[in-house]
Image 1 (cartoon, helix red, strand yellow):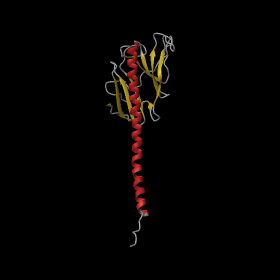
Image 2: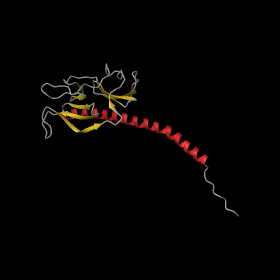
Image 3: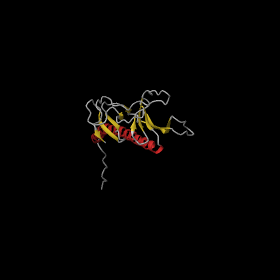
Length: 204
């Protein structure tokens, strides 16, 4: 009795399999790329929100002012505390940096692109928080920065120490925009919208 000959795939069958795999790759690669970009943007927004919350708690714990320092062009942020008592690393009356800087993801920048309207019941005009200032006798603005400052009661204040409720930090990846807003009570919220001039903000 003759053994049955084993039969492989034909060239047409192999080409069909390759074609199907190509179609699947063409569909999934853009989708996975968009998902990764979204995760980077939402993750950075969450990091900024958490840093603002830490700055708020740090101010209350140390009975002083604390600020979230945003380096817009450097694309990073960190926490600083105003020293009222000299330490080994910081003199009295200066903003002392605590910990290291956190960098934004490579696809994310500070800004809000074409978005022209802020989240509801936050700011009158959409804008990043006011620029940080030096601690000189005559303070001056530090270019390309934004600061969210909290006093010892966890209330957001401006550079003069007056309460404010219009602070916000915006980040974008060119397809969506996230906004981290700080209400006059110190309540921190995160918002998301599309990257167009007519936003549709949703609370995250």
